[in-house]
Length: 119
Image (tube, rainbow, N blue to C red; front, side, top):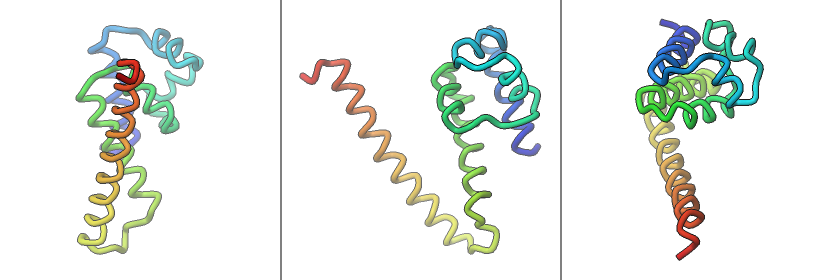
């Protein structure tokens, strides 16, 4: 399965699990129904900011994992690791995951502080 097919299948399955329509999602993301339909039908992948919005909207662990894999695959393709060794590629992704973990930790702390009134 290619990345576009994986993306569209993940969207369809998450939408079906949530029991909502394409129109519901388009409205929630403030996009046109045609735009969302193009994503779910496999015509194109949405920008990262919309992937994050979809992860938040669906609040579904299976969907979140698939989107993270897709984002990492896209990043991998854009960086051009084709000629790199397995060790170089692994080291890069370990560093990336470490940075993401730190960023998530800081973000979670800020959310906690906001919700708790900074107590």
